[in-house]
Length: 367
Image 1: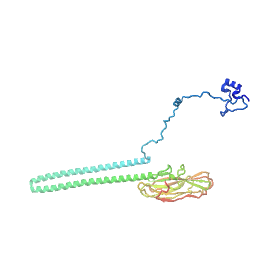
Image 2 (image 1 turned 30 degrees about the horizontal axis):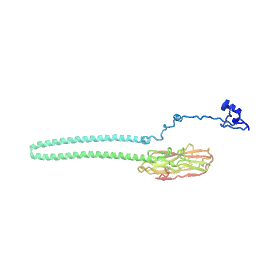
Image 3 (image 1 turned 120 degrees about the vertical axis):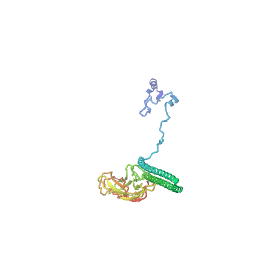
Image 4 (image 1 turned 90 degrees about the vertical axis):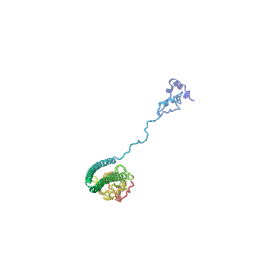
C-alpha cells in the first residue's frame, strides 16, 4: 500500500515547515476534493483550541430591546365637521346676527313708545291731582257741590287710570306677541335649514368623484356599483367587437331633493369635441319627491349604451365621452360623465346594454 496522508513523510515534513498552507486549497465552492492519485491528499486542517467568548459582555454590545417604535394608535383629534357645513353655518350666523340687530332696533322703538305712554300716564295723573285740588276748593263753597264734585272726580280718576292700565297692557301684549311670532319664524327657518343639511349629508355620501350636490339637490353612483374607481362616471368596456362589460353605474344614478317641495329634473346630453352621443341614452325629465324631515326625496334613473354604428373604424382602445347636464326647478345645475371604451378598430356589434328606466320615490342602486 502506498504511504498516503500523514503516512507520507514528505508531506508531513512540508506541513511542519509551512503549516496549513502545504495542504491542497478549497475549490470555488469551499470544498476540498480528494484524489486517489495524490499521495499528499486526504489531510485537512482545523483549530485545536475552540475560542471562548464572554457571552455576558457580547449581550451588552447588542441592543436587542426595541422601544422607539411608534405605537399603532390613531391620535385623538378634536370634533370636526365638513368645511362646507361650517361655511354655511357661518353665513347663517351672520344672517341671524343681522336679524338680531333689526329686532333690537324694533325693541328699542317699542321701548320708546312705552316711555311715551308712561309720560302721558304721569301727565294724566297730574291732571287728576289738579282736579282733586279744584274739587277741594269747591268743597269749601258748598258741601253738596263738594260731594258731587268729589264723586265725579273719583269716578273720573278711576276711569282714566283703568284706561291707562288697559292701554299699557295692550301695548305690552302686542309687543310680546310680535316678539314670539318673530322668534317662531326664526326657529322654523332654522329647523328647515337643519333638516335640509341633514338630508344632504345623509343622502350624498360615497366615493369621491362619484357624487355631486348643491344646497338643494344632488346625485350619486353607489359605491357598490363601481368596478373602475379611476373612471369618474358611468362606464362600459368592450372587448373584441361583441363583448361588453358595464363597469360603473349599471344599477343607475340616484337623484336627491333636499328641499320641502317636489322638483323636476331636466337632463340634456352632449359629446366631447365632434363626437356624437347616439351611443348613450337616458331619460330627459322626471320628478323627485320633496324631503321628509331629515330624509331626502329620491328618484333613480338608469341609462343605456349602444354600439357606434356611425363611427366606422377608429383607433384601438379609443374612449368616447359624454356629458349629462342636470337642471332643476330650484335653479340648480349639476353634471356627470359617461364613458365608452372601444378596444377594436372595427365596428362593435354587441347592440345595447342597460335601460332608460326611472323609479320615482326609491333608491334602487343599493347605495
